[in-house]
Length: 278
Image: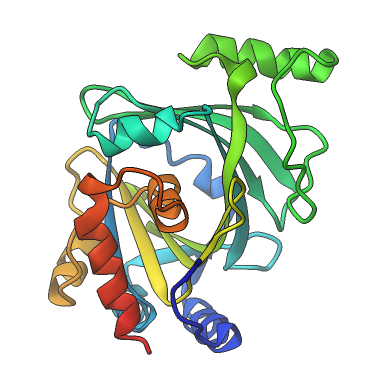
């Protein structure tokens, strides 16, 4: 199974890099001072063409994160789930208090973390993580099991037992994805904007793939109800809020055996957007 369209990657990245280079930079050290303790998250789904328009009108109000001279960073993620896909099912059924387990790799910096994300009944997301020692996103090990094999896996086992409501010994990798990310910060340092492009998914259970190149996932993370310059720009471009879980959407696109009733509207939206790029 293959879903999506092929768009010239060099054209996308080259054009984005040209635009993002016109932004004032912000370093990782400066980024660390932006805590957003009372943060709210809002996602938007759009196309690369719309993103170019957004970046052009936002550059006076935002700075672009720069790491080792790069402003577009590569990410890799491996998602774990139970044998019956319970983490996916809980989200699909709309239950609060859901959790996800993943390895998140920052490919360009060599940082890798095992993470547990918990969304509580009030819609707040808490993320806990620990270093994933020796993991290579360019040649990932798809046979990881969280058993007490050695001292390092004892650390993972203790971390998961502390933060996860599932038995970590039954978890296995179900889905992996790759994408590129631009991170913007408003000049008042009250919000971050992550912009993900070039999304690709690979289902590790059935070897199916989904290519969402051309689609863009924007996430606005701001401090409470502080004024956000980007919201008016998004409205001007008719880019509306829309939930989008990479794990759930990637799973729904690559595993036809999964229930997807609550994701049908979003899947149709994705299909319409990609059809418009052909």
